[in-house]
Length: 327
Ligand code: SAM
Image (cartoon, rainbow, N blue to C red; front, side, top):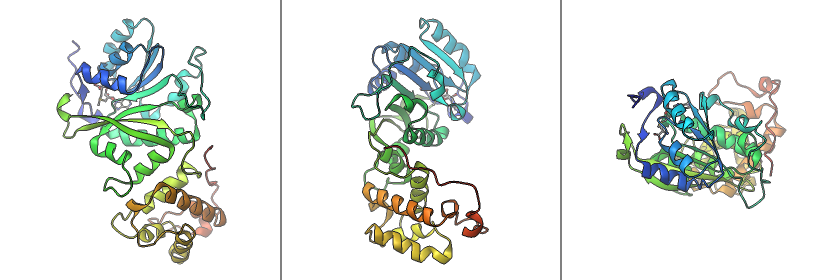
């Protein structure tokens, strides 16, 4: 109707099959009267499925102005249930969207077994899926943004490889930094896969739909940032001993002593590899590294790729170690 063509730069691959769109809404567990934020609605296939499922409010965040008229068309037919935000999702604080809405569903205490009647859903462009999930996992860990309202579940699509990494168990080839970051704060589950042939235009890869339910208690007590830095270095040399990656956390003059201290404290064999480390071991390593950062001001800012970095000058920078996340 609007003669829209996919823009490659925005990674636009549309899902035109309403059965799949309904399957996404169903697996996201959208029920009557729920409130939903959809990222990247495009021509509005999943949008329609969410409205059909009975959501009483749906806010969509779309960057491409060409989709605004068709989305407005949908909104007009949706009896004041749908609101359009013509914005870049990467620069949008989605928690602000409902902040001033007194009629939003009640917040649910974080440790309650029930989830709030709210959802974040999206068939994301592949190029923003990774930075966006990191942003959302960080917000989830601090219980800010939409996670101020409780353990709001997220249902997002990823290229299959990324979906497998997010959900990867220990000792699998797909285990990586993103597996740890996703699994310590949430329980990600690949709910189904979609063949690339179901998209228009057809992408090179298949797609995995992943639903993340925030955990009542995160499996690691340090801040998101401390764990993220530790994981980045530990997974840096995937095929090598874990000790090699760990050493890159420290300036050369202290790397042997500090890496050795951390491994001994955590009772981890220095010759194991990163993919064989379980979540408990990551928790011990992150807490041990956090302690070392407190003992050695500036250590958290140390970047081994920056030849200018030394602890003495870094310790003078006004960057506090991020506080532990709420438990
Ligand atoms: N949800 C639609 C579907 O399933 O058919 C479209 C999916 S398409 C893979 C991704 C959509 O996200 C496009 O409509 C694109 O314009 C939009 N998009 C891309 N980057 C975005 C961003 N940074 N913020 C918001 N929307 C974005």
